[in-house]
Amino acid sequence: MTKVSILIIDDAHQTMLAKFANAGFSVTHNEHMTIDEVHACIHKYQAVVVRSKIIADKTFFDKAHNLRCIGRVGAGMETIDIPYAQSKGIVCLNSPEGNRDAVGEQTIGVLLALMNNILKADREVRNLVWEREGNRGIELKGRTVGIIGYGNMGGAFAKKLQGFECTVIAYDKYKTNYSDQYVTEVSLTELQQRADVISFHVPQTAETEYMCNKSFIDACSKPFILLNTARGKVVNTHDVVEAMKTNKIIAAGLDVLEYESYNFQNFLTDTMPEPFNYLTSSPRVILTPHIAGWTIESKEKLSAILADKIVAFFTKK
Image (cartoon, rainbow, N blue to C red):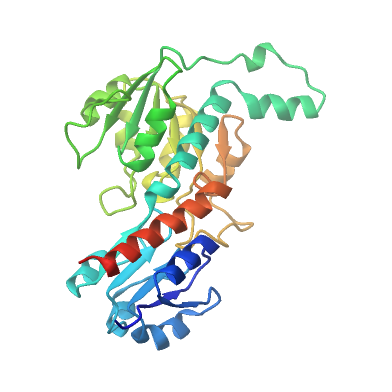
């Protein structure tokens, strides 16, 4: 049997390399390749592993004459032209199971920090301000948390909310009959009517771009806390800021921003849009640099799970 040739063009955990070696694959690992270098050699490989360094578009796949499989270390697939890849018989794999626990935990952490003014209070104490009444929090017990997108990430968040004695509801356009011990399935309208907290866990697609906009916010019956650990372009920052100014959005925890580049790097400048400046100056906002799924454990699990899927694809009978 001819060895499976696989190209890894981004950071990969040693566990992935070991699994491919054990499967007898011929592996080329070069995370410093430019897109031109990738285009020049991709025809040699049957499989490729990417992260967010490049965009696998029509040009990419037209050069990949022998490619049978592309794997994304992570959950989001927006940098891969999946329909075009599939039209050429190329299987597209990812590993959202690998960082769902990390995302669930961070989302819980950010929510609790917002509800209890933890970051604000910390900054004040460091500046010798001892303000107790101004930092009185609210409890999660008895509140209703609405999850939009009940896949790996939304499911992990719901599971980790158990024990807080809150009501958890979820809306997912592409799933039905998924109510379980962690969540109750509802329509989007019902979620907007009931939720005290709204957390987005959807992929970035044409349908989800700016899903959280003025119309969405206006349709919500209660002032709510907004959480986004999905993709930045799911949320219209301008509309969120306007809603925060009127207290329709009480607070926001944003791990991702609409201004991010496709590879999540090198987009912060001295001339960021005004809505961004509002977010950075607001004590009711927590911003993190796309790290909700970025733990030591998830780094290994993301690679290991994807490697297992790729090996299974090439060894299935």
